[in-house]
Length: 97
Image 1 (cartoon, rainbow, N blue to C red):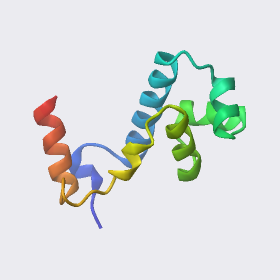
Image 2: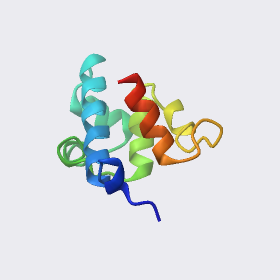
Image 3: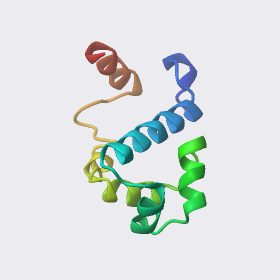
């Protein structure tokens, strides 16, 4: 099992970063929480909880991604041709950074 501590980000940190990015993308597109929840088939409370805590089901996250035109990102989530390890992914992120 991979120890994410060695990469400097715990799972909760990853969840919160994804939620932060989703919220920024939603606002960039001029979509309210109410509209996103309705279009993604979620309750407003579920969307609010996600934006505050990062907690959401994967299926709901994919639906949010589809509404925000980011669903293709999920298809590359575990793309073995691009990164073989979490360390390679994080190293590439730091190089871009």
